[in-house]
Length: 364
Image 1 (cartoon, rainbow, N blue to C red):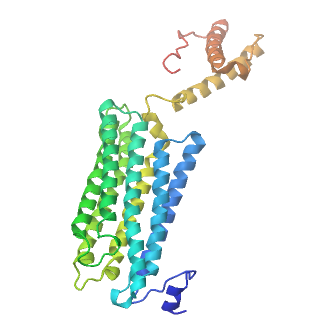
Image 2 (image 1 turned 60 degrees about the vertical axis):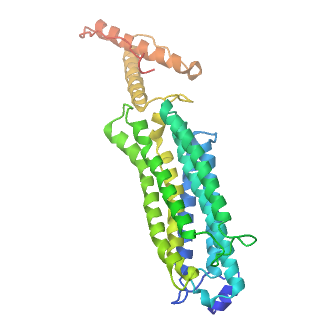
Image 3 (image 1 turned 90 degrees about the vertical axis):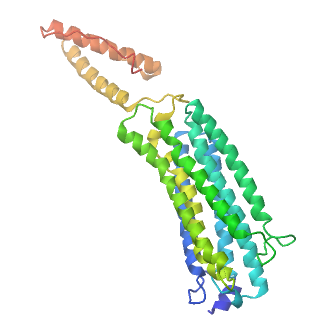
């Protein structure tokens, strides 16, 4: 099947790579990245649903960001079928118009996806209920992201004159290079805030140093988003500065860089939620969570109590078992009684006694 046949056939599965068509690089990169993103987001949502049945704003915003990112990736695929990665001189005008529309739509959707992924991280921090200053900073950040998204969506939407705002022809648009640089720089600054804000939140908490650094690193991994944004900015020079202008041909690298940036923004927003110990940051717990040390202590006490009961039964003492219907308070009392019986057992059999008390107050 020839290249022209593939271009005209909407169900053709692949686009052939050639010296005059580099769009397959974009198609493969876009599809692989969005599949990885879908898997990561699904893992985050499923992991949370297994523990908590409710859904919060952090989950809602990351799901919305993923759905928008999926639609944006579809637009990129259609743009590849209509000229992206090929020379402008080899495209017919209707084909170039379709490319321009898909590219235009993809730019707007990418900004929306970035905004929702940023908001997801901010909502995640607010869910941990940090100190007042950090909480207010997150609220200000959410308002800033909202204004940032609205401003640049409007700027991209009307960067070229009506009634064809998607037509990027010369003398019809504002300085697109400056607009995209402003978009990239502001994107870097907002992401740097999300990298830094966990440090003052986590540092005062009484964690081990290893756990403290691990939590910070989960948020700090978002530094990959500003780094990828730098590559996007670098790729803009040939895209806007080539002569003669050949945007369809020079859009391969900027498009791949944008896809990497968008998908990293979504996936890195999921990383902190995938760690179970993040719940230890919550000072106001919504459900009772027994620390692992107490669980182990209780298990040891239960095993010790069973051993004492068997010894008491062997020596003629009676024991009483409390069924599970009486709840955790009964189990606590049972454990205390077992410890007291153990002390009495040692005294009766002439073994050295040690003073002790049932001190569960701090643990329970």
